[in-house]
Image (cartoon, rainbow, N blue to C red; front, side, top):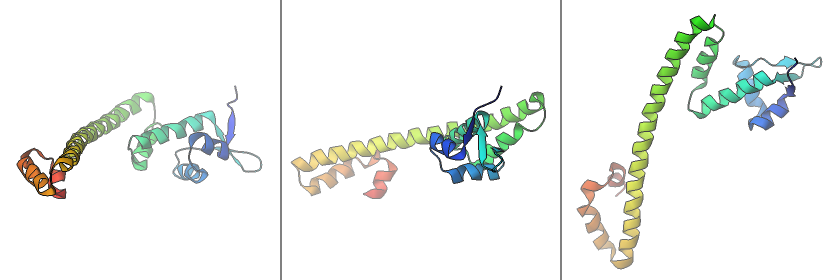
Amino acid sequence: MNERQFYIGEVAKSLGISQRTIRYYEELGFIRPGRTEGKFRLYAETEVNRLRSILYLKELGMTLEEIGALLKLGHEGSVHDISPKLRDALIARKRDFESKLERYREGIKEMEGILSLIEHCVDCRKNTDEETCHHCIDEHSSELPPLVKILL
């Protein structure tokens, strides 16, 4: 059964990336398009799906080097040989994601504190003079996130 083939412009448009990006991934060896008799690139559905996977991994924060290493594993022998290496690579990446997720959660919590303070100050300034606001901030300084302390 023949897979449907796509020209580079169709692939770029469907994935929302530039043709240059697609050619760059080809230069890196991530994809291998076929060619027409006129030397135009033709991408099988499997290559388009591979590009889609690459874009997804990039969206998750993986570098092209990391993606290349994962793709290389797929070309290194049998599934039995690849599985432990792929497993180790994915576990390491998962740990990295978990660490970043924790940092993001901390950042969100800090931003919520800052936004709360800003809302409080806006309300406070409506009812008092600016000098009173500074006293209020000084009184609550131990509760303030570090970023707010730097900015005040």
